[in-house]
Length: 324
Length: 253
Image (cartoon, rainbow over all chains, first blue to last red; front, side):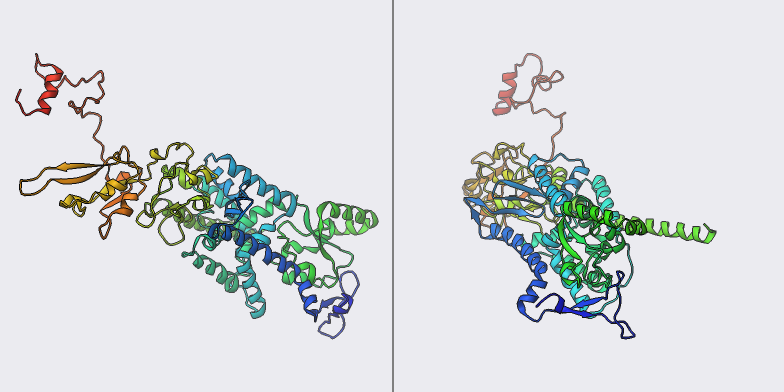
C-alpha cells in the first residue's frame, strides 16, 4: 500500500476538512491492512522490545545457563555494572556519580565502564536508555497503552521538571547519607535485578509504578519523576547524533505525534521548527515517526539536521524571524 | 506585580519547598532505615568495612556471577538486608574460601576490597558455639566442625576436658578469633537440628580485655616501659622464671 493511499482527511465538527498550519489539509494515517504493513508501522516498537528483551536475556543466560563466547562469559552483572565478553566493562554513570558524591573512591574498572556508557548516550544515541534498554519501559508502555484504551484522566498535575528536582535530591542525599541514594530505592534496578538474580518483593515496586502510571498520572514515573531519565536527558539531549528530525514544511500540526509521544513536550513544534529537531527529553523511541501522516518526523543524524536547518534558514529567512 | 499575585507566588514557592522537603525526608528515612536498621548479613570476603561496602557496592551482581559454589546471592526487596547487596547464608551454602577469590576479582568498584590478598585473612564473621547444644560439649565425640574447618586446627581446636573417673574426658571445640574467617563451613557441617556453631557479627560476641590488664604468665605479653611481667607479683629475690614456674606447677612459692 502506498503511503498516500493510507491517508484519510481529518474533518472538523462542521464536516469540512481541517486545514493545517502550513495551509495543507490534515490527515489521519489509516492502519495498513496487510500484516507486513502493520509490522512496518510497528517497526521501532518491535525493535525496541527486541533490544530490551535481548539485553535482559544475555544477562539472564550468562548467569543461569553460563552462556559463553570464545571462552568468555557473554554478559555478566546487570545494568548497574556489567562486563561484555570479559573485556568491555560497562556501568551506570548515574550510579557512579552518586557514589562519587558520597565521597568514596572507586576502582578503575567501574569508572571506565561508566565512561563507556556515558559516551554511548552522550555522543551517539541520546536518551535511548529509557526506551531501548530500561526494562521498566515495557511495564510503563503497557500502562500508557491501557490508558489510551480506557481513557483514564489524571488525578493531579505535576511538572515534568520535577525529575530534575529528584535528580538533585538524589545527589544531595547521597552526599548526606554516604550511600548511592537512588540506587537503594530504584524500581528500575530492583526490577532488573530480580528478573536476573531471582524474584523477591521487588515486583511490588513495579506494580506500584504500573498503577501510578495507569490510574494516577500519565507517564507519572518515566516522564515526571525518574531521575535516571532526567540524567540521560541532560547527558544526551544536546550532543547525541541520533535525533528525530522535524520537517516544518510538511507538518500540518494535526497532533497525531503528541498523542503517542511519552514526552509530548519535546514536540514543541514552534521550537522544533527552528532547530529542526525535537526537544532534549526525547527518548528516541521512534513512536512518532510511523504515525505522522505527512512523514514530517524521521530519525536523522544530528550533523545532517544541522545542515538542513542551515539551508532552511537561508531559503526562508522570514519564517525564522517570525518564529523567533 | 500586584500584592495578590506576589502572595500567590510565595505560596507556590513555599508549597514546592514543602513537597520537596517532605519527599526528601521520607527518602532520607528510607535510606537510613535500610543502611542502619537492617539485619547483619555475612558479606563476601573483603566486604567487612560495612559503611564503605554499602557506599561502594553498585549492586551489579558480578560477584554472584563469579562465585563457583553459588554461595553469594543478591538481597532482594523484603529480606531486611540492604537491597541488591551480595550476602550468603552459610547453613545453606557456606563460603569455600577460593584461593583466587573470584568474587573480589569480579567486583568492579572495590566494594569487595582488593586489599585482601590472602583468603585466610578474611573476616566475614566469627564462628560461635552454643555450648548448651553442641554435641561435643555434652560429652559426645562429634568434632565435625573441627575436621571440616578450612583453617585446619587453627580457627577451631579441640581441647580435652577431663571429668570424673566414671566418665571419659570431653573433647570440646574452641573457636579462635585470630584465625576464624567466618566462612561458615562449620555452620553448614554442624549435625544438630539447628546449628550449634554459627557465624555471627564479631562485635556481638567479642569482648576486649583492655590495655591495663597484663597476663604476666604469658611470655608473649608485650613488655612496655610501664610494665614488665616480673614487676607486679614478685617479691624481692624472686626471678621471673620462678614466678612463671609458680603459675605452671602446683608447688607453693
